[in-house]
Length: 248
Image (cartoon, rainbow, N blue to C red):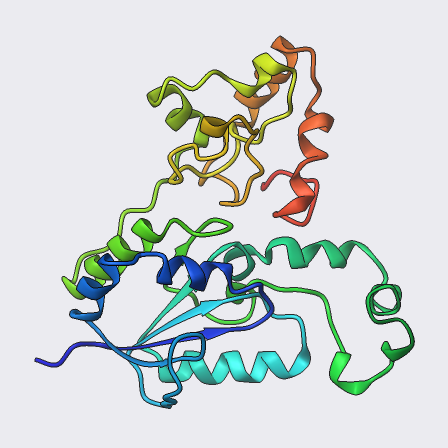
């Protein structure tokens, strides 16, 4: 039985999540032994329109991107969204809070009217096509990506955490960032990163998106205990989630 053919694509992004794949170093050799890479602009010159698994980094920000994404979806048996930009729009979604003409003018100046700089509200992949699996984070945890790919090859469903980052902080005996008078998104953000930022002296930025069922009531209790407000928490949500509202 032949290895699944894998293609990696990118849209609007910094390609940092793809760099994390390269950063697997020796472990990338064991992964390549399980799959057949057929397209990956960042690492190879080959091109193919035939693949089983499509891994996509980046958000959708231009009209022409929509058609390209739909074509990739039609060709792939499995589509994996790679990183925050692909899974929820990421930092690119900040522009949705402003007039897009003003955004183009601020970024490109006199060249703002050029056709190839046309833009539209940023969307995550699953706002346009069906996404089978998501690798969360900015950047991703490359070990998580490796585990997901191995599960798929073995015919197993990858287990992606649904509980909040606070659980990992407690597990790792990390002092709560609220003790340092900071606003941390750990109570409402999906775990799976090993509490990477709080473990290194920073608050959680929410790059993995909302936990499956964020305990908003518990988060409110945390705010009360430390003299903060829910509005303080919401003010941090726009960086990766693109809005200042909790999910219904």
